[in-house]
Image (cartoon, rainbow over all chains, first blue to last red; front, side, top):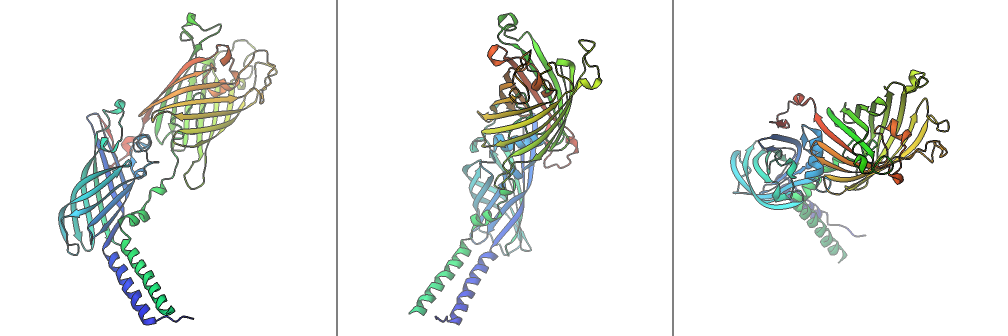
Length: 186
Length: 315
């Protein structure tokens, strides 16, 4: 039988484990990102909210990704929610909305502090990718990272069609608010 | 030699593991967090609680009230149709006003009143099984129980000798499946209990099977149809006044809270307790008629929602 050089093996394992540990220490996640959407017209204001968004942040590359299961958005009127999923977002076909990008400028993630940042990347909604730069605030405190961002999504840019019959009730540009508290991935 | 090889091999594996760990980037992490699979209910098998003539498996959403106005005109062709009645538009064989209310997302109660026989009806409809993606529940099952009361004065002194003669009961389990976003099909066996029938060969209690379907033409426009098989099952063909199986086809247009249906059917009557048993017109003899349904949905108890994040306002 073949004998294994134990010392070398242990060394290797240690090196690799350190690698894995390092990577994980730089990764922050959240499973309960708050996402609010808001449509405002002179006729009707419509709001919907979800606490079920996910976010991943890799500090070494300043990479941020946020995704939301569209069906987790909850409306006041359930029939409206059904129409939102069925007629507008086609949630069975496109179950997720997603943003993936990189933060600018470079941030020192090890220090507590607050930053105004921009994330440049791709926003994917209704199966349509749009290059976007989304601004927001980052607060770092006691190893927790809080993100807060307000931005707009134009329905037309993502091929979400609003029929003329309900045109006065649904805004062409939907306001989005995202609040996330990320913790280190252990 | 072998030992070296093994070491190289091990080293490669470990590097791979390490690489995998560092390659565990946003994408794979997000995939592992993905919660969209949780939302696996197959919704909106049909847009409305009714198809053309029959009920669908859909129930009202919780606290939603549906006001439903239905109209069946007269025969387009034949003896009673043609230009003299403007192809039936001068005639109303039946009118219906009904209210359907969602006690919960799965339980709906409804009341209605038809012009024909001055029939009042009351029903309860309970969704029992919800179709789901991936997890192996391939169909919807809804149970319908409906009671009808004929309120009109008797035509002959012998009619309605007992008060119970005015009452009919319908029991109907409804099975449906959304095959794709465009196509949904439904089967509904039903049992109608009556105390009397007009023809001595016509049984009081009638077993029937209905078939219904939807083909979505666009997001808001569907072609819908339903057919109820009565003759050929529990009802013989040797009746003095022939009775026919009801068939309805229609276009269903959804515009937010409203649904408009433009239908053609041979049945003169609107409520199951009437049309399953008493359809006297046939598609082949000009007995087809135009009909429409207007449905308006109201969300009640909105003020109960205190969450500012989901509160909608109509100005």
